[in-house]
Image 1: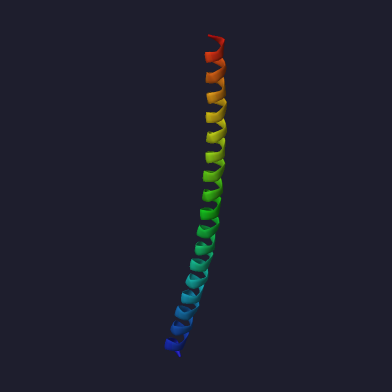
Image 2: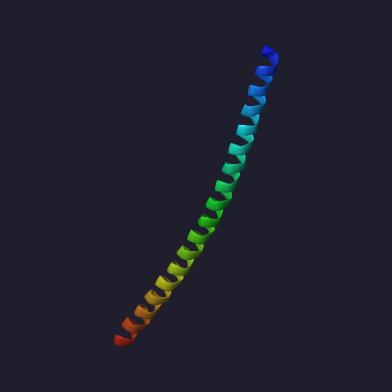
Length: 64
Protein backbone atom coordinates (compact mmCIF):
# COMPACT_ATOMS: atom_id res chain seq x y z
CA UNK A 1 0.00 0.00 0.00
CA UNK A 2 2.76 2.46 0.95
CA UNK A 3 4.66 1.61 -2.24
CA UNK A 4 1.54 2.32 -4.26
CA UNK A 5 1.17 5.74 -2.60
CA UNK A 6 4.84 6.55 -3.22
CA UNK A 7 4.57 5.44 -6.84
CA UNK A 8 1.49 7.63 -7.35
CA UNK A 9 3.30 10.61 -5.83
CA UNK A 10 6.30 10.02 -8.07
CA UNK A 11 4.14 9.69 -11.18
CA UNK A 12 2.33 12.90 -10.27
CA UNK A 13 5.64 14.72 -9.75
CA UNK A 14 6.94 13.43 -13.09
CA UNK A 15 3.80 14.60 -14.87
CA UNK A 16 4.03 18.00 -13.19
CA UNK A 17 7.67 18.35 -14.25
CA UNK A 18 6.80 17.39 -17.83
CA UNK A 19 4.09 20.07 -17.89
CA UNK A 20 6.46 22.66 -16.44
CA UNK A 21 9.08 21.73 -19.03
CA UNK A 22 6.53 22.14 -21.82
CA UNK A 23 5.63 25.59 -20.49
CA UNK A 24 9.31 26.51 -20.41
CA UNK A 25 9.74 25.42 -24.03
CA UNK A 26 6.73 27.54 -25.01
CA UNK A 27 8.15 30.51 -23.11
CA UNK A 28 11.51 30.04 -24.85
CA UNK A 29 9.84 29.96 -28.27
CA UNK A 30 7.96 33.15 -27.43
CA UNK A 31 11.12 34.87 -26.19
CA UNK A 32 13.04 33.75 -29.28
CA UNK A 33 10.35 35.30 -31.48
CA UNK A 34 10.42 38.50 -29.43
CA UNK A 35 14.21 38.58 -29.74
CA UNK A 36 13.95 38.31 -33.53
CA UNK A 37 11.39 41.12 -33.57
CA UNK A 38 13.68 43.33 -31.50
CA UNK A 39 16.66 42.58 -33.78
CA UNK A 40 14.58 43.48 -36.84
CA UNK A 41 13.43 46.74 -35.24
CA UNK A 42 17.00 47.62 -34.25
CA UNK A 43 18.20 46.92 -37.79
CA UNK A 44 15.47 49.10 -39.27
CA UNK A 45 16.23 51.91 -36.83
CA UNK A 46 19.97 51.70 -37.56
CA UNK A 47 19.34 51.82 -41.30
CA UNK A 48 17.15 54.89 -40.85
CA UNK A 49 19.77 56.61 -38.68
CA UNK A 50 22.54 55.83 -41.17
CA UNK A 51 20.42 57.17 -44.00
CA UNK A 52 19.70 60.37 -42.06
CA UNK A 53 23.36 60.75 -41.16
CA UNK A 54 24.39 60.26 -44.77
CA UNK A 55 21.83 62.85 -45.89
CA UNK A 56 23.15 65.32 -43.31
CA UNK A 57 26.72 64.75 -44.47
CA UNK A 58 25.70 65.36 -48.09
CA UNK A 59 23.92 68.58 -47.09
CA UNK A 60 26.94 69.80 -45.10
CA UNK A 61 29.27 69.10 -48.03
CA UNK A 62 26.97 71.01 -50.36
CA UNK A 63 27.14 74.01 -48.02
CA UNK A 64 30.93 74.17 -48.35
